[in-house]
Image 1 (cartoon, rainbow, N blue to C red):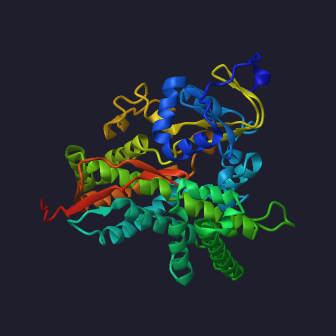
Image 2: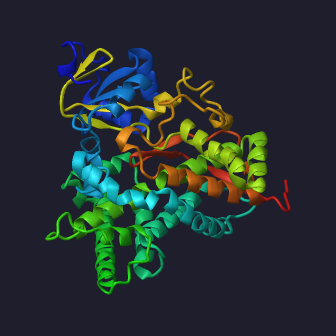
Length: 451
């Protein structure tokens, strides 16, 4: 609620008094242990000072998070909260815009992820999965996250462009793998023209510039196809967007810059969550033979009922190790949350990771237990891997469908084993959290089923 709706308060949230630089480093590289420690000391509302947002308030109570997700979009600006992504995603991106501009972008992209569209993607995901896992080195350890990243990138390329073949898209595929394979330190260079002249930051900037060249060339070619009237039957996202009319009879449809920003957003954000969830699922199933056996039986059985358990595996993977630790909203007005006054300009950050790890909401939260998602499942507001409110990820349904299809294909073909008993740690990669060792597993054919 805004302060105009409540009694004034002078209370500000508690938090550490460490220098901004120290807090920024801890948040970027060690949040997996630092934020839980801060919560134990300060409670469910904690104030931080970190680069580049400066004032950030972490929220760990689902009731407080619900206030943010249900609050007016004119007050809680998610686009402004995501400004760290603007140099890459672009000013028109679904992730960067707010209010009316965001709603317009969301309406343009939603048809590509509707129920009818999802049903059409299933066969494509199955074909690409079979091709990818056929390359797995049977009986030898390998990083499953690398494989799943390649697979989900290929899937999103098909969703965005249709048949992703040809030299231009081959180069784009290679570049996108490099663009996303960066650490938190690289993000600093996104906002510094000086750093972009040196070393790793210069290379990152050059790759992104080349991505733009390829995308604009693809847009130009597809526009020429549209002029010939050959796009009517195509269902890929780019073709759909090119068919969008202008807002008035005298205006054109989307500009090249608008198209570029939405395409980059889908290509970069449209596969990371699924790839990481699948890698962690393989990692955990490989260490839990009983649950792997149940999932394998579901894969063999097929059908909606069996898919329910496979989807539960994916959901539990996203609960235990969310790919995004928190989401952000920049305040345009002063608000009160949990009795604390939070001024305009502050970023409030609902913590997905802290809610998911809270034993008050998930019994034995450290345990891998897909069964918690069967039946009624967790309480509303306690499972948040895709965010919430009007900004909830529009690809959530697609991500779960893709994960279920891939799990079925893999578990019907392989038995998974851990390459070492100790679980892998989590590490930061750009703004996401991924398996620290690549989620290494050993896959054995279920036909021969040696050791």
